Image (tube, rainbow, N blue to C red; front, side):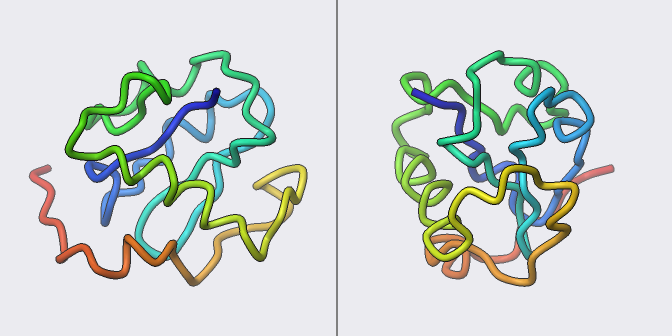
Length: 108
């Protein structure tokens, strides 16, 4: 099991979760953040700091966003398990699902 980042993060990328993650497993894609499922230790530190409630424990992802669990894993198909987002830096691509999502407008 792991945590999943879903639709509310698309085009927002608040990054508060990155600062809370003790194992540096939250990576930045072009339009959203992704949790590396093999590196996540299920501590839950990321979930309460997300301002748009985009992070869910895998079993608790709302039905309409279930495909985001697979999308988080798909982001790492080529990257693998780099062992730390900070040293890797932001990536300029997203999982295939995210490419199909219309631009999201977030109120500030």
